[in-house]
View 1: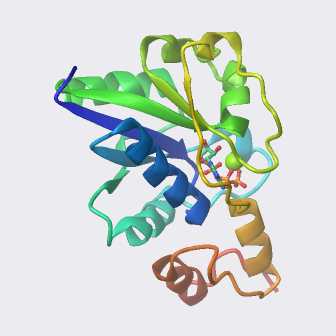
View 2 (view 1 turned 90 degrees about the horizontal axis):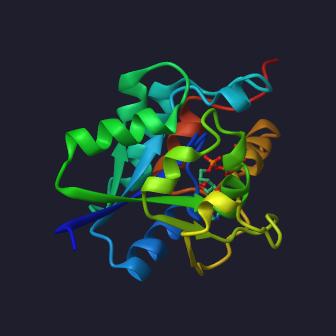
Length: 198
Ligand code: ATP
Ligand code: MG
């Protein structure tokens, strides 16, 4: 067994919320991982066509604020450093080169897992790495795509929060307290993120 095993939870994190943090923590505990890295997607091409995604630098700051108090949750800016649209095969190659001593475990929510076949390489890169899939409210009973046949399903506390819901509440001027860490709420309020332009 490699000395160090680290989970990778990739996402837009626009913004990060308690569902992300609790799932990451429970997967770490269940699999005995040394840490989980939140890999902030630079340009989520499947989303950026539909809505204005918050600049990557702001999303990195939000993730740093969300994880500041927890040394076992780490923000990873590799995709932002590499630039361009997300391409998980490239990200994994890069991380394996940067950290040859680490075994990375890719963590996916059930909704993300079912979309893997729509990735650029059809998710082929995931065949070579351990994968953990967590259920998520609203995702339903998802059958995993064939190429995730080797994935481990990890039960986690079901937290019905999405970034979409947080953005909607902020846009309506409603409170996002208790859905996101206080440090994230402070930034969202101070910088008036997600507010409708008047
Ligand atoms: P959006 O609503 O904008 O799509 P999101 O809440 O789905 O945002 P993402 O950044 O898209 O957040 O998700 C990153 C990863 O975290 C995905 O694998 C997703 O399935 C997982 N995830 C998000 N929210 C939860 C949750 N509440 N419970 C478990 N996993 C989650
Ligand atoms: Mg999502």
